[in-house]
Image: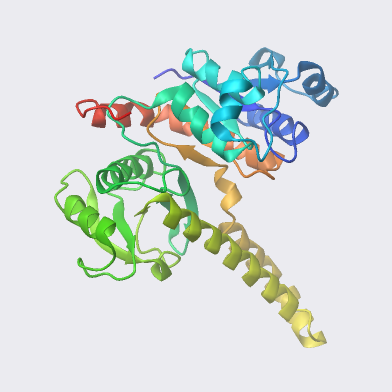
Length: 339
């Protein structure tokens, strides 16, 4: 693998564009000397954002793109019609081998469709899943699929398990990652037809450490390193997780302000509480990679800040350095392609 990392950032994707994507790219360049960043979007507006910033000019370039795909646009139509959008132009750079990775906080559907149609799936990969790192009591785990394939079949979930295991082993440095199937009970015969058949297929695999079913309530405790499911279930888990953490922190803060005694106690526990909250901040991981493509595509939250973009770019560097794309491609190279 090359020791240099070429990452494209969609400067006009997301609620805070172009200010936050541009700032995040600059922060990442300062943090990683082997990194180069390409910003896609309206060049004159990007240069306005860069004005006054201190950054390594030899490692940052701009590719002009005059169109923007906005929230609410139909994914397939937007990719087909807006060829000069910051999103499509950026993905084309990955397809042509002029960049290793692409990051966007733009229209989720368009990023997913564009990733599979333009960047393209690796040979033998049936479906490309979104993989989201979520914090737990043991550190973190990978939720896959968290939003790309709501109609996945058992054989697709098996591939998700293999890809997720490779990601946790080679990017997150987890030795023999524990792979679990999200279900309503731990018994092998629990769940619907999809989970029952998937359980049987996963049990036969010798290349992953499958530990069986895992109830969703056990995810925060650290019951597994890779949580496998189809995207409908995965997205519900993810959003419930995010909402619960947000509400819980709000309740704690309100509780600490109810009396003079609680305020004093709050001041005493504030340092420890801040560290705990930081550990459960999903933004520290940047974004969710779309696994199984010929290039790397990462989706950030629509309201991503500069810090999140920075983390996403650095996440891409770690992904490229560990050659996860190559590992996944080789794992499925002998399997028949699916349209």
